[in-house]
Length: 351
Image 1 (cartoon, rainbow, N blue to C red):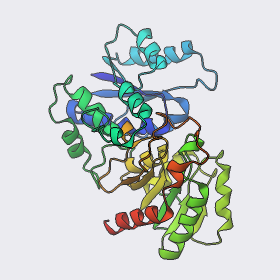
Image 2 (image 1 turned 90 degrees about the vertical axis):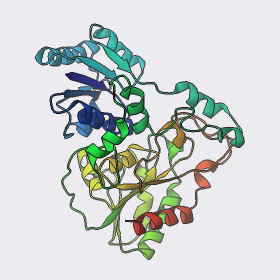
Image 3 (image 1 turned 90 degrees about the horizontal axis):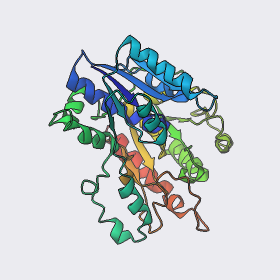
């Protein structure tokens, strides 16, 4: 059986789909073959995955035509006929792909759009508390997708099967394959202050204060990991310490994955960096502001934790893209350095 899994973006969402890959491999055995379709900038996430045979990238930003992209999939199909398209994105782009290959059976993920829409529109903390994760289907995405599809595949223990298949350090369901060590002093903690949208970021001043506290109270090296566009990370350069390593803009995606895979802990926003870390079995502290853990993106590792403040105005959007209408970014600013430090302490002591 050859299954084509489709998830174009974003970085963290692509990583989360590896739980589905692991489940399918555990269920279907060695004879099944899996290919993955994603945006070209995320191909590197999947090329080393032990369960993926071929990875096809769509370079829409680079001007690749839909015809050229379609021909790549047709070539794959001619080499090994695709038996099923598993649409894990549920967008117009993935719908177009399914229509382009309409003769191939397809299944589409339920993104819980209605439930997420309701959660963003209710402006009462008490009413939000009624959103039971199982009742509204907003449990962690890595388990939700498996539970949604396991009945179709006649499986009665999908999540448990995946945990047993992975046998990870703390029952992580996602994976990205073995990573080479990066040239850094160990042990180290990763600080990932970036996010896909500005409003999802904890204030950089808070991250800087946290780094100062950790340098003072622990013996760990600290690694700042962010992309070339995250120039606000220059704020860390004011800290003078040989245990602080600011790698903002200095690592490729592959190198960032290597750094995260060998960290002791990762602290960051609701972003792809934390999902990559968890896929390597690294515990995380995830900070939520305008988005909500109930959307399905809370950390799933048993030793990972998240911090979020209950407010009537949050979540304000499903992606965190919408600008805050208030005079201050309360949902992020109300998360204190002391709370984050205490959460880090608890995780490190539980290792």
